[in-house]
Length: 158
Image (cartoon, rainbow, N blue to C red; front, side):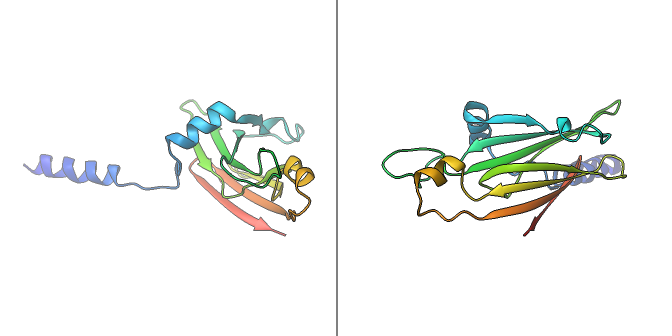
């Protein structure tokens, strides 16, 4: 009986772990796969040694209406995947809070193992939306991503 009780406690504890993993659903995944694009971030700043494999996925936010007399992509959602290069690799996918259009990416030098800082420059709207609708006001923001295999911190900068 003690063994059964111990097993139940361990099982419930393991199942109740609610980390920062995957805060998106199957609909998000299907949009990314159908309409999205992927960018290998490890190709940025090749002179910096990288301990993690990082990919950025971009998918359009459907149903927004910022174009005049036509349809187009106003803003994009972004997802980031991270994988280790270990013997037993860890991997994870995170949905980023930033939306719009990424116009710049800078991989920052960091000396911690399995940790990376990447700075994104992002416009509030896509360049197509801005050229189609002159009443849109663009806001450019810098976002710092601190990323580990099981954790993501997103910090907006100005």
